[in-house]
Image (cartoon, rainbow, N blue to C red; front, side):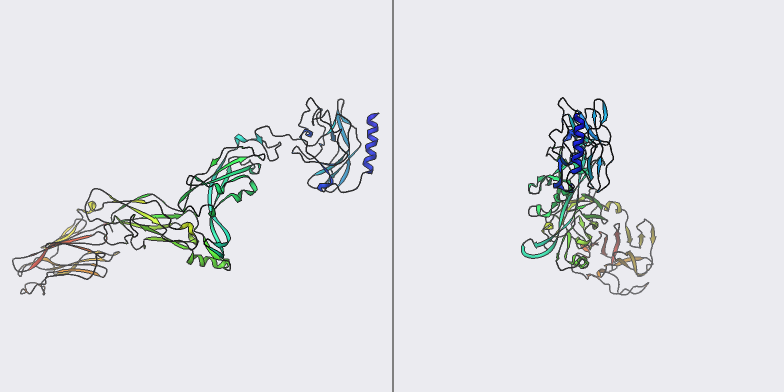
Length: 575
C-alpha cells in the first residue's frame, strides 16, 4: 500500500513540474557521489537518497554520468535497493519519460516509479529525480576509483595504471623563438629578436600512457648549475611548452659551448609525487668537431668537420618582410669560426713553417651564416714538414674561436672550443732513399730508383710539381774541352713567380770549343721565406719549398779553372 501511494504521487508530480530547460549549468544539481557506481558494493551502512531534494540532476562523478539501463546486482551502488532505468536513453535534445525499477530482495525490477524524466543535453544527460523512501538509492555509472598507487585519465576505471610502471625518458632539442622588443642594451629599440631556446621532449615507454594524466616538475641545468629562476612546478601537460629554456635565462651568465641538461618529475593532480626525476643526457650547446684529436702526415692534410648544434639567431627590423629576411641574414647575421694556435692570436696560412700545422689559403677559419648554421663546414689542416728525418711524431694544439659577435646577439660573444690535438707523423723517413739526383758525368737517378745517363748539353727539367707550380731545372756543359761527358754547372728553382738561380756555366756552351769566361753568381727574386728557404753552408746549399721538398747541391772549383756542381739532389714529399 505504501509503494502504491508513492507511485501515484510521483506520477502526479512528473506531470506538473516546470518546463524550464534543465541543460544550462545553473539549471540542474550536480551529483558527485562515487558510491552510486554499480561497481561499488554496499558496506555495513547503506547509502540512500531519502534526503534528496526533488529536481533535475546530473552525475559528474568519474564513475559515469548515466543511470544504468540493466539491473545491477543487489547491494551494489552503495545502497540496499539500487534504482535503475528499464528503458532507453533519448536522442540529442530530446526529453522522455523513462520507466524505472528497483532491485529488491525478491525482484530485479520492482516498479517503485512509473517514469523519470530524462533529457539528452548533447554531451551529458540530466534526470528529474524525486525523493525515494529509505534504503533506496539512484545508481549512476559503472566504474570505480583506481586503487591506491594507480592513476587514470579520470581517476576511475578503466585504464588504471601503476605509477611505478610509468617509465619515460627526457631528451633535448634546440630552436629559435621570436621575441619583439628592444635589443639588449638599446632600450628604445623595437625589433624582432630570434633567440635561442632549448626544449625538452618527454617520451613514455608505453605508448598507451596518456601524458595528460600528470602534472610536471621541470628543472634546467647549465653544466652542473641549477637555473632556479627557470624551474617549473605542477605544470599541466597542455602548458608544458611554456617550460622551455629561453635565452634570457642564461645569456647574462653563460656563453655558448656549455652543457645543458633537463630533469622532469611526474605529479598527480593532488600534487602527490609519482616518480623520481628523470634526466636527459647532456646537450652540447655551441659548436663541435667530429673528433677531439687528429693525426696527419707531414705535407698531407685532414679536414676538421665543424658543426653548430644550435642556431646562430638574428635580429630583424620589424618592417623587414619575410621574403627579405634571408638576404638580410646572409649579410648581417654571419660569423667566422677562426682557428688559432694557443697562446697566439694568429695562425700560419702556409709556406715553410716552424709550426707543426698550417692552414693553406683557408683564411684561418670557416664562415657560417644564420641561414646555413646546421650545415657542416670543413677546415683543412696541413701537416707542416720539419725538414728533418725523425722517428717521433710532433704534435700541436689548435683552438677554434668566435673572434667577434653576431650583431646584437651576445650569446656567441668570444665563444671558445676546447683545444684540439693535432699529431703530425713524420714523413721524411719514408722518402729518405727516394732521391732524384744528377751527379757529374752525369749519372741520373729517378725517384723510383731507375738509373740512366745524360750526355746532352744545356738546360733540362729535373722536377715539376704541377699542382704547386714548382720547377727545378739543371744546366749541363762538357766536363772538359776534349771530354764527351757532361757535368752539372747550374740549377734554377722556381715556386710560381719566385726564382732562385745558381749559375756557374761557361758563357758559351758546346762541344770542343775554346774555353770562355764562366758565370759565377747566385741570385734570388723574392724577399721573404714564404716561397722557399735558402740554407747555405760554405759551398753547399739546401733550398726548402713550402711543401718540405728539398733541393741540395754544392759547387767546387776544378783544376781547369772552371766551376761545377758536383750533384743536384731532390728529396720530395707526398704532395
